[in-house]
Image 1: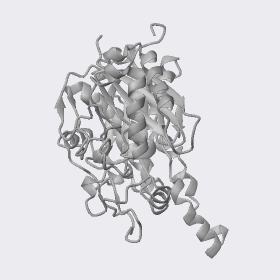
Image 2: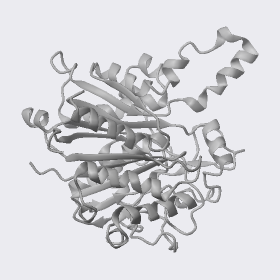
Image 3: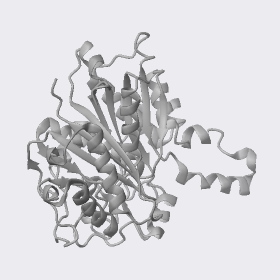
Image 4: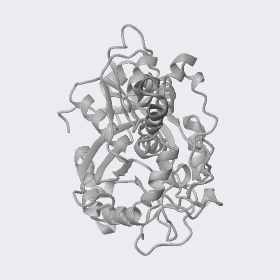
Length: 414
């Protein structure tokens, strides 16, 4: 990849069910602390699923003024908060000289599950009573747009949505935008807030969410465990500052990791069931993009949703991508066991986790791993964080419908 500039990570920001900043989230994950509990964002007493990984104590007015917060969806509010954290850590000042250089690429589903309320208003009160701010509040593009507006940056602004692969997809596209000279600095990641009546009801009816742990929410998300029965819906945001190595060096930035490669694929098989061969293609293409051999991978951040089919397929896909002998040597874990599955937002939060694993040489655990599944027979770092030399990380995100994305982060060596 010598024809492309090296792309590095210089800032991190996160809003999650286990913390409102990077270090709180990271220490909670290492401690195996679950952020899953009873739903409080709406009355879920009549629902078959009454638990979720909600972000607690989030105050958008700490990150934007009242008027801006009122005109922004929760997903966009969290995107702004995570972006501000990342920009601060990166030591990037937005001024007349820099504002045109900094762009934003954020994945989100926006407020698609909240649009139905407006149809009720039209039926009961007429079309003139629709919320005039509906599109700015709910449009998925507003995560990136709101970040750009609040921070005052005028580089490229893009939004990605490829289901649960969205966050990793956005990061991969940001990588290529920098490699090809479309931008020098990008705030890239994902934000999602779909713990809503329609979101929970629809995914429960689809059979994707677990209905077995309403009384024990902290035990509900159990990736790769034989007794897993579906994922737990989550929310949150994760944003990284990406820039060329040269740009980071010129301004004296601390480089946290190198963003080495990304790969994509599509299953082309089924609307809901995952396909191991399709998933493996994304991993192999990410490794090829990074110029990394399978045996060089130190750790895999799994998609690991806690559904019966996904965890089985991902295990098989890892074996196909790395070779079975290598796959058995590489530790794998899923932080969705603690924060739930935030859909489009997951890849952003998990990319932050991957950089921290490289920084601290420690792996977050897969909690609630109690009963081995013969179809999931790899090393899932069960229940306790593990010290481990982490030089190369492969991170997976696989979307409902067959959209797959993987990325490779590695320790920066100048």
